[in-house]
Length: 272
Image (cartoon, rainbow, N blue to C red; front, side, top):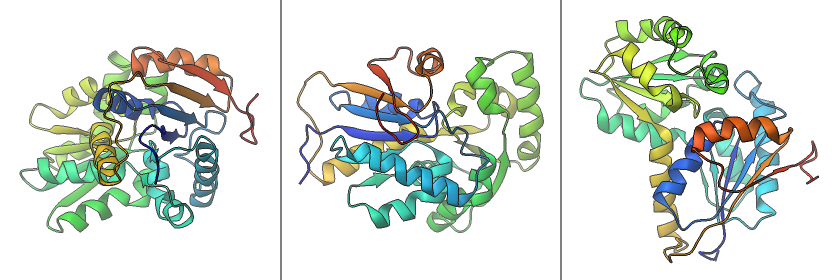
């Protein structure tokens, strides 16, 4: 059985998964975290299923070097396509972001009309629709891919005219469907939440999968008796496959601060 003192492993295609890390830091403040961001091969959202699964397998294998007690896929695209394969090949508990977000949306909706926004690959996978309709087949799901939202976040263009104009264009079809709940199906999107909320109006509830995922991680660790409840200072380590400078700069926007070292690993996931 894994020890409570072992770290949680988190991986993402790049930087967006830091929204999940932030939620884990806030909800599980005693837990140490190893984060792997595949920044040299981002984005995953435009790649094939085969490529996404391959990269995800490599990410898990890297995190297992640190004897992690569970792994969080902090990437909607990888969660959509790779989760069943990862659970087949690895014994460590693996948590994706799709089911927690879907469950929260099912609980929130009043008119049973739910919207999902995400990368092209996430939307094409139909993963949210499948997860929601397993929970409540009566809910109608409307999806919209928003590929420009990720570069807007990474450039820091969160509230200006460009962001508002793009958000209005992407979200108009969902407004016409009279949804009352909208899943932010990409870990970058919570940083655009005020702009998205303004475009959708006050009658629409936004669902941030990161917060729901942190709650699911707590439940998994409790169930395995590996939750670290002692008040000890955690250790945070971040690994990236590209030069760390961009990660450091943009990562501060996601976390407010980077609370640990950032180390580079090469294309073979070896530390440099």
